[in-house]
Length: 198
Image 1 (cartoon, rainbow, N blue to C red):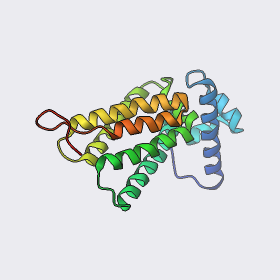
Image 2: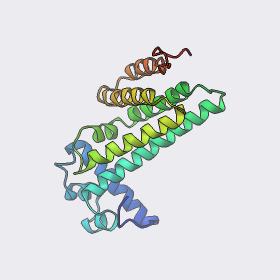
Image 3: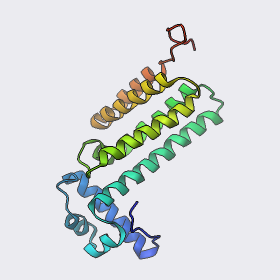
Image 4: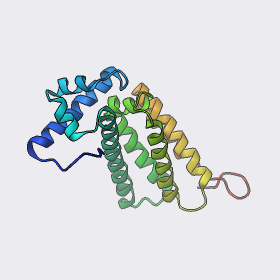
């Protein structure tokens, strides 16, 4: 979120939304590096001053789009996990798969914006933001699987992260389902060194 962002209502909210929608289109079309503030304000039919009233600049627009996308993705995954538990599901792997499916569905639904954040053309330091987000996600997964299953969390989180990249690139829903089926078959290693039964 912007350092200068303040609660906006009415016309200010409409301008802010128009600027974000324009930034999304410009970044998707040109990439972050090639996009300019003037491209964004022109597409939004706004002024440079209005952009700087709501955002600190081009990087702030990009990071706000990223945070808003991640918020929608978090809502999708939490809702899927809650629905699975409400339906009586107690297997953490099945809850994870339901949440992962919701995440992949969100990536496919918002494929252009998901691809924007995966192509490596973000503001300086964005790779750190992505790494931090992945660590947070791995921590949530660890909490879901409860207990000493660190290797399982590393494997399923890493596999899904790689799958997200490929599914967004290809737009292939079947690939998403195939990956989820494979991940769903992964089980923790027992103390004897073999996979746990389950």
